[in-house]
Length: 573
Image (tube, rainbow, N blue to C red; front, top):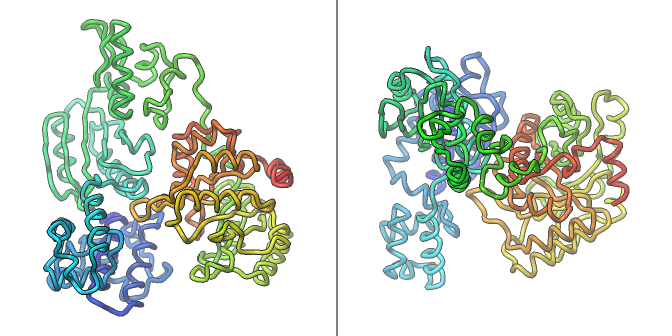
């Protein structure tokens, strides 16, 4: 089996980290990091590209040398360079770079001076007061490292939804190829579309469960077989993700899907409801005594309990059971409801494709409109546009719209919210634009009061239409800003500013709970891809999942409007 993209990206990242600690040339390190990002974001498996004779050097930032190494990793899961680096220094050093406040130079110093080569060893050294003895590390730094390593060690390892998806798709395809194994489907938190996944539950129907479990253990990505029984097998994949395969007879499929999809709290609540009706609910069905009442479909299970079928994303015990009992479940937004995308980048700033290429890619996916929102001038690292360049882009978009037939391109910007809450571009220019997305890209560590005031001031600016990635979180990389989100959401509702559900799987910001809060406060959201290349429009599915978890309906979503309705709403703002 070819190695999945997530594993290839992880290998490239590890090479970059170890080179960085070694003190290698910064451009060389950056090349590996960029390659890891490119491969991690690819919509097609590298193994598939190679099988079809595709040249990997056609990918952005991939030269001949990197292409050869990526091909080797795709076949074997590793490459000679990584093995040499691991021989020269402990592989676990790479993990130390995930501890906040530790860069490559500090990791190298701690390793040489204290012999620290794991997060556990660093935590112990900080507890014993040995870190402060190292040149450049004081008592305050040691205390911060102690707190950071404690938090890191307590954190359960979870995988971003898009990373988990890279493992799920080929695994389900592999399992489905076994004769007699039917309806192979993911369940658990992956099916609920949580932003991260701890482990992966796969459900299948078959008469011979032991044969299906043996087939799982022979999968090429399996690194370790934890258990292999007659109806359940557990393996750990090379990327570290644990997979549980459960096999049930066809008559129990619906009950098993219900049982293994919902959160623990949702399951407990349903079993209590069943007991109150004199029934028993488990993964094999609904029973009245020993007599089966339901179980072949999920709908039959919920109906036996007096409930409408509950969409998987809602199964968290947050009011969905009562809503299903009383007929008040929302008609959740779907991908088909989206008419446009209001946050799109091009190569004018830090994107990779032209305005026209992005427009055509969006049109091919059925969108009626997109807003080009390249970064504003302050974000120099992303090639932000100054007023002159933005004015030229406005004219370019106008000319392009004269030629386009299937889609309309709106002129916009992702303008930086400065530390004091003012915006990075003059109001006179912002008012020429169709769409203004205002976002924070720095000073993430302001106090709760200052950060909240900063956002509130930006929301009051009359040219702002959307608050981009409102909490600024990067999953597993950066914690959200400390904000009074209720005040922010209420202010957005009062000002008529939409809150973004940023569909980039490394952000998924707003969270599901904040989506629910926005709905309750009457604030609209915009489900945006934050696309930086044509393939990134496919990330909209992650934003849809997040919005559905937040109980959002089409009426709650700004870009579920037609273009005419959107223009009216933007004009009213």
